[in-house]
Structure formats: structure tokens, C-alpha cells
Amino acid sequence: SGKLYLVPTPIGNLEDITLRAIRILKEVDLVLAEDTRTSGNLLKHLAVQTKLQAFHAHNEHRALQSTIQLLQQGKNLALVSDAGTPGISDPGFLLVRECYVHNIPVECLPGPTAFVPAIVKSGLPSDKFVFEGFLPHKKGRKTRIEKLMPEDRTIIFYESPYRLVKTLEQLRDAFGADRQASVSRELTKMFEETRNGSLEELAAHYTKHTPKGEIVLIVAGYNSKSDTLGNVDEAYSEADDEE
Ligand code: SAM
Image (cartoon, rainbow, N blue to C red):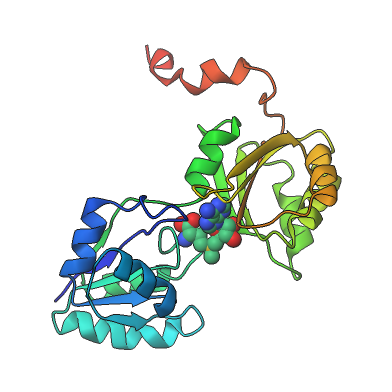
């Protein structure tokens, strides 16, 4: 059979694509894309002439069968998302799982994904974290937030600019006004901005200044020592502990 490649693409800055990603996109028989127009522009920019086909989130279940058939016929396929790494708050997981069911090899190239630069530059502990993706919009939202309150690892959320203030306020009410957080907007793009502060301060700021663009919200864990430097040594002390 052929092979499935998961190929990360830039989250803004078009320079953030690896040499291997470009080569794989050129070599495969077909590129499966969330949005053929978005990915069409990228392929054009990279001078990749491989044919594109839609692989939609809403028809991921249906798209599976035909994709598996192509792979079984020996075709090598690359799955890309609009931005970042497929399978991270984007379609991919069902297809990967189905490949294993049919003994089809899978390879995921390392590359851009929004949460890694966001947590690393947040200044909050990055030795242990949980990725929450998008909070549910309505049903289950409150329960989710309450469940996360005592989480002691740094928490990562994806958020839309329209919902950021609401989320900051709800987190502030559930976690406490002093809990530290970091908002990264438009990572790798012209208007990249990271703002750190308490949930209270960030909610107040973005109420006054309506946020624009794509957002990653990082929230310190429960009882995190993130506002002292105390945690820094801890984060690097693994080697010492083993002595
Ligand atoms: N697959 C992508 C990844 O690997 O990060 C995530 C796709 S998800 C549908 C889109 C969300 O990712 C946005 O709403 C935002 O929360 C985050 N995101 C993507 N690009 C970003 C950027 N340049 N700056 C900040 N957040 C970004």
C-alpha cells in the first residue's frame, strides 16, 4: 500500500515550512486539504504541482473510505490543514486510526503548530502542560472549566477573538482573579503580540481593546509558582533527582 503523510504547514509566516515538508508535498500522488483554496495558495507559493483534493472536517467519516481505498491502491497521500499540524484541533485523528486498522503506514512530519511557540514564550511553566484546544461553546462549557480549576499543569486553549473576553471572564470567575495567564495573538505574523498578566488584568485589557486575529490562551496551573522564579530550577532538576 501507499503511505499517509501528515504534513504541517505554516501558521502565518510562509518561511516556516520544512525542506522535507516541501519535498513530500511534491512527491506524493495527492494532497488532501481541509480547504483546497487555502492550501492551493500555499502549494502555488511553494511551486508544488501535486493535485489537491478536499478532505473536510464535516465529512471526515465519509472521506475515510475513499482515502483508505486510494492508499490501498498504492497511492502516497499527504494530509494538510489550513494551518499548523493536522490532527491538532483539525481533522486527522480518524484517518490515522483507520490507517492502522488497514495496516497502512503513517508518518507525521514535525513542524509548525500554534501552541508550542505560545507556551514557550508565555513564561509560564512549560515542563508539564495540558492541551485543551477549544472550550465547548455552549453545552459542557461550564463543567469543563470547573473540572480544570484544580489542574496543576499549565493549561493551553485555542480561542477565537470573539470569545476571548467571555472565556477570560469565566476562567477568572472559576479559577480566581489572580491566576496568571498569557494571550498570544497572530503568532509568526506581522502583528504578533503576547500579553501576560492575571486573568483579571487580561479580561480588563481585552474588554477595552477588542482583540483581533488568531489566539492561543495559556493559563497557569493551580498553585503554580509561575510568578516567582522558584519553579525554574524544578523544571530542570530531573537529572539531579536521579542521582
Ligand atoms: N492545526 C492548528 C495547529 O497545529 O495549531 C490549529 C488549527 S485550529 C482550527 C485554529 C486555531 O489555532 C486558532 O483559532 C488559534 O486558536 C490557533 N492558531 C492558529 N494559528 C495561530 C497563530 N498564528 N497565532 C495564534 N494562534 C493561532
